Image 1 (cartoon, rainbow, N blue to C red):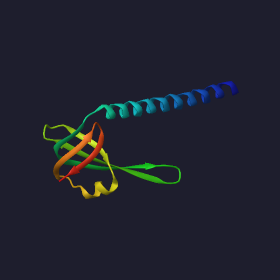
Image 2: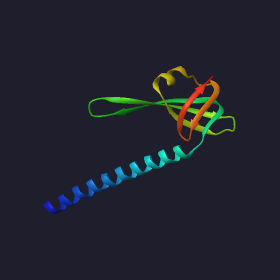
Image 3: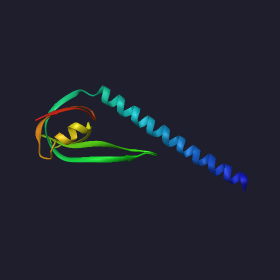
Image 4: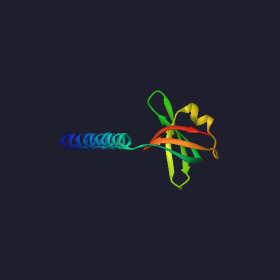
Length: 108
């Protein structure tokens, strides 16, 4: 029975390790893709806003996301700074600058 418990704990630890490596690899791949993408400035309209809560042991944080629709109809959900999130409104039109999934700015 004790051996079975150890095996189960090892399997759980192994699963967490594999998940960690997968997330790390995915983030590195996204970073490389963004670095290799050109900086683009396109005409866009804000179609959605989303604030995501992240709960940690003793505190919580938020991330802020804006969904833009380009003139070509492409939807881009990009993470923005808190201050910019509260300045932007759904329906705002302007010029969006981004590099892959990396938000650079939005001028109305």
